[in-house]
Length: 457
Ligand code: ADP
Ligand code: MG
Image 1 (cartoon, rainbow, N blue to C red):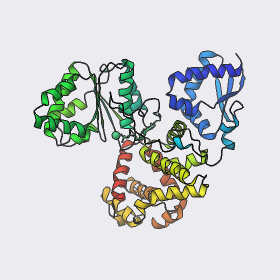
Image 2: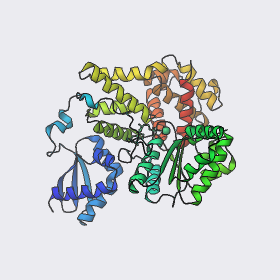
Image 3: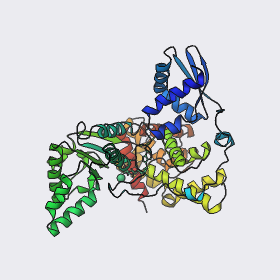
């Protein structure tokens, strides 16, 4: 088999395993540059792709290659221009900003709700990018679509705002609906709407009809279940609906901004139902995943931005994907209004404008106080020259926030922290950043503290 054919066949294998979005982002522009004996060299058009393939997809690539040619033992990745790409697709010649056709602008936040299912057409598995922060949740969601009601029942997905819970929940709905040739009854509802419906039905004495409707559903998807806290009547009705569906092997999926045990004011019997199936969390996407998400979204609307800009957007929108989409929308709107390609400096300005309105009045002192309060430490104590873990962590978090929210320079932060070297500051910020991608407790703490900081007025 010649190298090109081998790669085509390999890609076909890989395409079966990955979501369309991931495949398009990482593999579409790759090629084989060399195949000699045991080793294969894969060409990538940029460094992001190269690193991503090396770190995340190497096993998949090697396995796929070896099913086609068992002699292959080594795969190497290099950066190259792909000869089969049209010149316009080559990254090197792409302008800083390409002008966007009008019909493609600002579609990122668009809504198109299906009348039969109540699902947003955008929220599918196809458009869902998988990274280490959501891998498990994604796998569990997929498993649910394969055998609804059989394996993980209920499935309980939790995570912070704007991280893809609703997207994943609705993707389950779409897939189950399509797989059943549109025969299964899908019910997607937020817990707020659920509560409203219950209250209205009680008032109008139509609660039996309402319950009948829910019991006839094949898959019940309840979004943001945390809001039923303290709503006794809603909880009671939900408990009964849950039991009926569960006994009939109907799938139930919940999302929440926190795990069941952290939802206060819910009945124990309901909490134990939530905990009775599978619980998965969605964390904060790391840098590479944010890059992948941006690229997927750009691809979707038919826009190409060069890697430098994509990198800047990813750096800027760190905590949440909805924010990231907001940033993209701002940039697209900018292009639309000016009908021109902004310079790198203008992009920075734009990104700064997005970040600044909330934060310009916050001082380093306030950040220190809030972090100190959170960990129950007073400022003088926290700044003591001590390497004890209890003090090092809050200090690192302060430095991280001074950088992340206040956008202070590293030397400046060092000075505020009692004369620390800027390399110490960089190390602290990077350490927290890295840990956020896998340490859920830390990311929850950071999210809580951040909220408090942003509320300062
Ligand atoms: P949540 O319900 O957790 O608050 P959403 O599901 O509403 O968050 O996601 C916010 C936005 O980010 C949506 O527009 C969604 O499409 C997008 N998004 C979230 N995660 C991903 C992902 N993994 N891939 C692509 N888009 C995503
Ligand atoms: Mg949501």
